Length: 341
Image 1 (tube, one colour):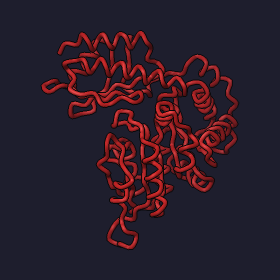
Image 2 (image 1 turned 30 degrees about the vertical axis):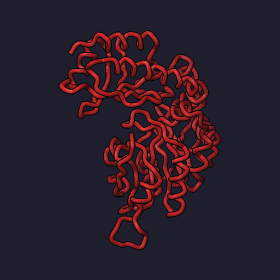
Image 3 (image 1 turned 135 degrees about the horizontal axis):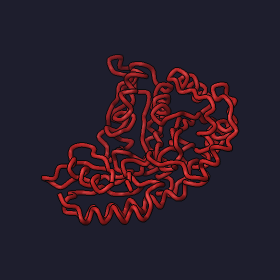
Image 4 (image 1 turned 45 degrees about the vertical axis):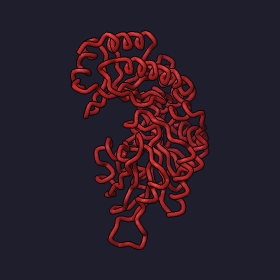
């Protein structure tokens, strides 16, 4: 038995989800004739209290579409140095939108309103890139699934509004944050210009993300999605899985969080681990002890049928998910306890 903790994207549809997919009513979504996609988009827009939503094949495409609709070539996007939109989307912000990135040296992928203010360029200085967009990520991937303080997001919103910028949330794991913090989707829908959410991570759908925003933003996003090649035909089979995930897999995210904390305790008690980052959700970031080769750490667990990922510079990651059972958790905890390097 292989235990895959590389990411929460490795899940497979549950039998009930598959049944829902097989029974989906589909059409051609490029012509907006897929009833299952249309229903999902309306469902998510209503959930967040936003006007419109648009279904995408990936979170990266949804984020890149948001960046493009909020900016012009030569503009500046402000984000954290660990932001997914900067580090892990293939340089798309530069390639697709021609924007530069002002990187904030935040804390575990999060930053303050004051730090945003320091990065905004004066609008009358023609020598500097025009500041047009602030992007945040919740939860933060490289930050170990850390959750933002919503009050800080509100303070950033004021700075953004005062300076005429747009505000985008990469909410790939937003539902993890909502469950962990006891927050609601509508809280975010009230203050963000656009939000991307992913259904193929903790929620366990096989494919799919959505971008939410105003009618004007989503109309523009539809054209950009076409430009990026993101139009799908009978996408309702995927939308049905995403809808099922929203109905059945949100509350259970707390189980993933508890399992992540159990892994963290095991790692903290290992002499081969120097530090474990605080664990709030389903991502466990830890560092190999001095003198320990992180690649050998990964390989030793792999020899025992446990897959994790190295992130460089001694940093390693485990991610709990829908398919990670209690029996698997026990096996990993024992493996960590008995690790020999």
